[in-house]
Amino acid sequence: MSNELIAVLAFFATFISLIIMYRFFGKSGLFVWVAIGTVIANIQVTKTIEIFGITATLGNILFASIYLATDILNDIYGRKTAKRAVWLGFVSVIVMVLLMSISVMFKPAESDIAQQSMETLFAVVPRIALGSIIAYIIGQYFDVYIFNFIKKYFSSDRTFIVRAYGSTAISSIIDTALFTLIAFYGLMPNAVLFEIFLTTYLFKLITTICNVPFGYMAKSIAKDVDDHGSTLH
Image (cartoon, rainbow, N blue to C red; front, side, top):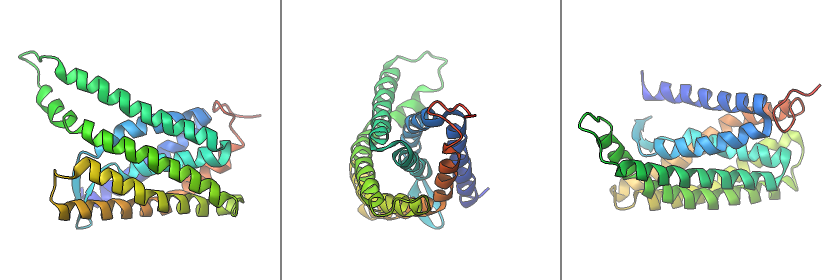
């Protein structure tokens, strides 16, 4: 199966899962999504792939879904709630890095088969996590701010696409540039680094355009669920 086909499957699996989490667990489901999504995306991003003839990192789809989750929270529940989700993602990455770094420190048994792989993966993750944390906090705060600024002028349900796309398009430039420099500078040739920045930003924009219908879907079911995800009668 080609990487392109897997990417399409990953896209639908990711955003359908997000909607299911919101449908059954409401606002709490989106908080959980941001937490687990941030952790998984920071592991995925350690892997580079060739897709559509260019070099890119994994994690772009999942990161885009986190932006959508915070946009939904912002739009339906307000900026304060969206900021809480941002900090929840931040803390989740910190806990993951701390606990996995300690796990690698344990001396493995002779029968162990995981230590080398864990060292390979999580020796890189702290630097990637640092880049992600800095880029995530700054990028998400810009996203929340820009989203609310745009909402002052485009506040109807029909213009959710303007708010979601506009805020992500601008904040992703900052997010992607910071992350690429902190996480990969010195580890890869500058040409590859620049290519990763461009392709990551491009994929985020494309994913944002494609995922907006899922945002409208979430808004359409918002009136059917309360803050805990229970069906309203």
